[in-house]
Length: 71
Image (tube, rainbow, N blue to C red; front, top):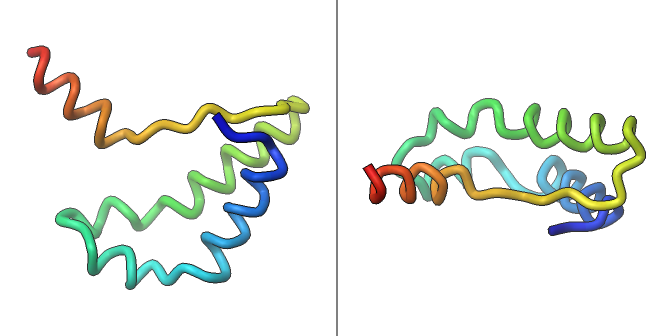
């Protein structure tokens, strides 16, 4: 769980300090990252609009891994 102020600073860091090419070079599925900045910003905008105090983050790869294990 992350407070909204931390989410704001992490979103800014994601845009300004982390290169998408740097991330793509570290993962097996680089195309997955094409829309991550847009998703990150969308979540922040919605959270701010509804005056959320916290955001519960998830690792979607972990979710898929759990589903594959259970099936």
